[in-house]
Image (tube, rainbow, N blue to C red; front, side, top):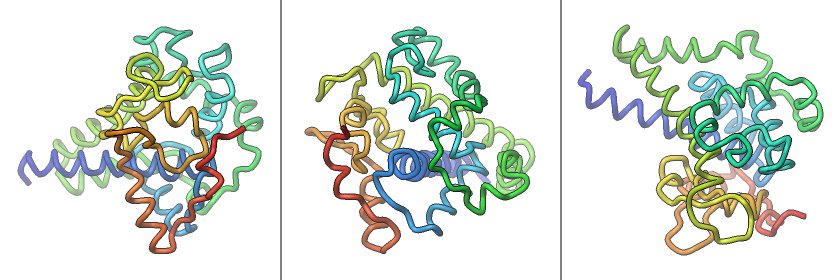
Length: 239
């Protein structure tokens, strides 16, 4: 397989991971802005297990704590408290530190219900199976390189959301987060962070002119297919 196709497929998997993160982890599991059909939710969970290693309950707990203490003492990854470069460079370690805190998991995700993927004995080692998939597609050398590139780029994009998304960009609303249209394009809409902090339970992140939320057309498609239900109350600001 040519390097061009390896790059295209790897970037495609990266965007699929971004879509699963924002639709399943963020808008559904964490903020309950939409309800996904169990089969679709399980597929998205499986994709994240294989290609990111994320544990949904941990991710939801860390993010809910971020909203509870946004840019205040207690925020797991505030660039205003820790410095922009620290969040950009060490976001993965800041996340892992909070995700490994049992008190955070208990306090912020008492409503989480484990699914079939959670019960898989080797779920925490799913990225190893993801590496095997990359190797089977591209061979040992390029498979390992593509797998590592996917992991690194996924971490970098999330670091930019947590870092730049609170320091750089414009604001539609009066909160500490910011919007970056270009970041929204590569993060399945997550770059519209100011909008999200104003309406945290909204299933749609685009609010202003020239803003595009790449995940929203997929949510509408899933809704039309009967695989997702957008909760109408989520279009209003959460109390």
